[in-house]
Structures are given as C-alpha cells and as structure tokens.
View (cartoon, rainbow, N blue to C red):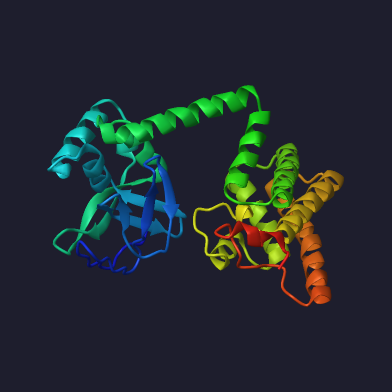
Length: 309
C-alpha cells in the first residue's frame, strides 16, 4: 500500500497534496460521500484524515480523528488507546486487522496512525459510547433490519432499489434497464456456478474479461474514465452502455450453456467470446451513429444517462 506526501492546512483553508482526499459526511448516518482525490475529509467542523488506496479501491480513515469527533474527548489518542486495549481483550478482530499508515500530524510531519476501512470503521463506531455515535448505530440497526426483511421477502430488494434510484433522479427507462441487467447478471453467475467457477475473485476476473472485450477497457480503467472510485460502475452507465453490458453477459451465458466449459480457464475463453459479441455491436453502432458509445457521463447527473442528448 503506497502512502506519502504532505498536507498543509489552517482552520479556514485546506490545500490538497498527493493521496489524501476531500470527503463529506451526510447527515451523520454513515454514508461516506466521495469527492476529489488528494485532500482531507470534513466531519461537521472537524477534520478527518483519509487515504485512498488505488490498488485495493478502498478508503482508509484515521481512527483517532473519528473517535475524537464522536467521543468529544480532549485527548483522543488516549481514548483510542484505552478503547483499543478493551476491544483486544474482548477478542475484537476489527482492532487486530487495523492497518497503520503515515498521515500528516498536527506538527506537519508524517506519522504512523491507526486507520480503518469503511467497513471496519462502522464496526468500531458501535463500540464508542457517545451520543454523537447514536445516529450511526440507529442507521446500522435499520440496515440490518432491512436486510433481514429482504431475506424473508426478496421482492423488497427490488422495491427498495427502484425507490433508491428514483430518489437519485434516474428515469424510469434507465431504472428498468438497470433492473434487467441485474437479472441477466444473475443468470450469468448461475451459469458460472454450474461450470465450477469460484465465486469472488474468479467471477471478478471473468467480468473484467467481458468488459474489456466489449469496451476496450478493463473495469478499473472504465471507472477511472468516468471519474469513479468506490461507486458501482453500472449505476453510472448510460442506457446504451447498460444494453451492451447485458449483451456481453447474455452472450457469455448462452455460449457457456452450449459449450459447457469446465472450470475457470475454459470459462475465461467463453467470457472473451461473449464480450466480443457486444464489442462488435458497439463498433457497428459507433460507425452508424458517428459518435462513441462509451461516455464520461455518470450518476452525478443521472438525467444525462438516458442517451437523449
């Protein structure tokens, strides 16, 4: 994991250098809204040091900073040290798995400090006995309840997805395409499971092969092209991009059903072939329309993802 650089700031101005990033915390409900790379995060009127790991595609937060804000302790370093020891004694794996990174200290020097990923941070917040942590805890409890409800009634997942997309400003046409893409994706992963492909990294590699075959970019390059980090790539695709993604995955599913590959390596060839079907379609569309299919447009302006302009 690479880190480094310096950051200089006062109470009124923040200048951004190297890998530190500007964040906003929305309504204290634990939703981390990503902004431009290379700065520092504001949590109300407090500064939270952050780091973006490009290889892992993960944000890391300074635990001392977050704990200091939530606990309102005058000595957050001591508060975290005591809390960390207690959590270790309780066998809390989150503490054991915490990383340490060099981040700019108050004196301007780069010093090692404990950091946590978003997932680790949300778990740690539950251990902070403070009124300021309560909104997070209530939100986490609500998320857990919703997940249990969705397990009992899967239709709720679709309803919540539709409501979320509508609230973000997506059109009904786009939402229908997105939900259809989820269905086609499920058919593809079911087929990979049948062919003894291992879920996780192998699914990700095969998905990357399909994406690269139709778009001439791997998933990481595609996200970078659209200015994305942790955001879901498909939630930032236009209607036409979604259609070609679906064509690549549906083609891969059909070819796989016909060929019945054994395991990952044989399925990799099928993924390339399926993606190529969509790639040829993209090139034909671009030739006939005279403009590129792949766009830099993203969910910051969801109304522009409808391919109407």
